[in-house]
Amino acid sequence: MRILFDYQAFEMQRFGGVSNSYAELIKHLQGENCICRIGLKESDNVYIQDGRIKPLHYTYNRYWKAKKIIPGQRTLTKVAFSIIGIKNYALDINRDYCIKLLKRQNFNIFEPTFFDSYFLPYLKGKPFVLTVHDMIPELFPQYFQRHDFQIVNKNILCPLASAIHVPSQQTKEDLINILKINPDKITVIPHGAPNTPSTIHPSLFAFPYILYVGARWGYKNFTQFAEECAIVIESHPELHIICTGSPFSEEEQKLLSEHKITQHFIQLFSSEQDLVSLYQNAVAFVFPSAYEGFGMPILEAFSCGCPVFLNNASCFPEVGGDAAIYFDINRRGELAEQLISLYQAPQETKETIISKGKERLKLFSWENSAKKMKQIYENIL
Image 1 (cartoon, rainbow, N blue to C red):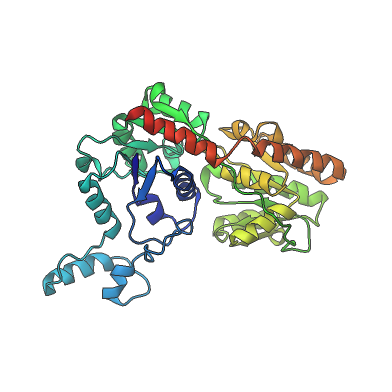
Image 2 (spheres, rainbow, N blue to C red; image 1 turned 90 degrees about the vertical axis):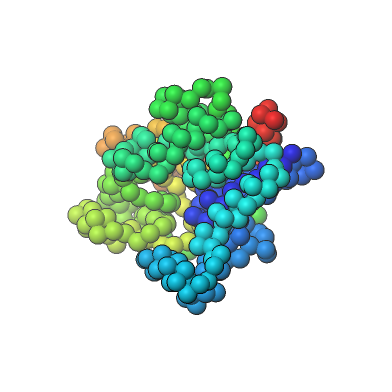
């Protein structure tokens, strides 16, 4: 059985949950009865270990001699090259390569790694399997344009796919309710757990802290989280909040200033090793988001022995089970009270929570995810 995966996730992400999930599945699917290939020529993705894949824009920069692409530069270059007679120059080298592989037809099943429908004219009757990680654009239209790329193309691809896999029962129910997809067509395949770190890393900070990981906009509920932390800091000023990801926006800085907690919030970009240290040494990891398709940071925290606090919404109870502490982010003071309670609790209480997380982690493995994916492939051939 030959599975052809396309380039999309590996071109649009240097690192991230979508591309990581495909990389792990491909690694665990690869074997005698399943040969996987990625239609990819250039990528900066950290999960792809293949010396034949060049850095992203490698071909482009050979002509342009530039270290980065400025807005409009690609279009201008394409026009300039056509004028001076340079032919067959691929601005979309990954897409062109993937189309080339599709035309060869040397595969049994195709799997696009995002929602661009470019491949449909080249399947020639071959089945394709689609992953839908979440329904965020459909559920939170206030944060997306009406004709958002994902919304438009999900409506095109979901009815045509031979099978769909989703990472949680929550996403399956959303897909059924919003796009009216036949439930029998959708299989829930949870993501696998990350490897448990073999060593304990020293803390990056000399003070105790609460950890927030990832994006902070819109439905992520960062404003409510900051307000809850202000209550915690009032009674425990030694505590800080570490936020990974992008620098604080002007709006966020204003929020922190209004609550007089600016000095307690620290933003940093973290490497994989730094992130492990952050989880291992945190008082707790908090995930206040209103919705996620799965929530990989939950498993990351469990694997590092970090107590996990989850907004009681979306798929969080499905993933966290009895190993997490739940709160309602819209009930003022509830999260703050629970954080203070854990912070003041005896070490035995904290160890019990950590042990539950380690036990919960055993339910998630990439080996099992790959086996379920293989069953989907076999069922549609």
